[in-house]
Length: 214
Image (cartoon, rainbow, N blue to C red; front, side, top):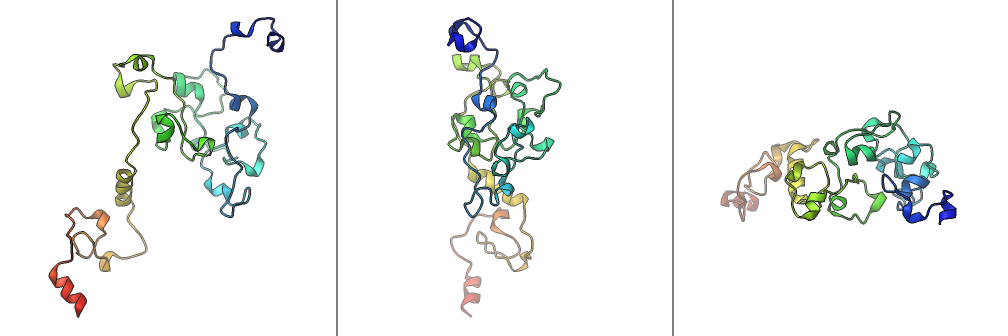
């Protein structure tokens, strides 16, 4: 190992300022699967699913071309966050090609990765943000709590149903008038059940039942 390093030092004497990322070094996504479109073929229709700029393409090292699962277009809003900036809060590289923005600005972080493991790996469409673990939290208590700049493990998963309901309220349906829409909670016309604050009735009122029988 010492001869392979070429420095004449034993491998255990070599120290690194930051952990080595083989994926970063070789310029190849070791986890990502070949891009597959809606028909299942490589590269067919896959571009519509690409939401993040390819970090290897930014360096000129991506060898996948059109088969890549990531964008090959420079878009600052979709550029991956700088690892040094996300980990230490600063980056001294003036020519850094990655984004320098607060991690909290990324609303699409993967909750499974934040919890500790995401089975989709590099194929996940949500952001996988690496954080340096908080030494105080690992010892048992961190006085900064959620405001800590270091990573605190998360053992709970978000309630996806609770997140989906506000989105449904914020994005009303278009192309159809609500004039003839009947809410299945209060059985009144003019609105959808998602926007109804009334308590759900077990069955329609008697006058509606009589109308349906006519």
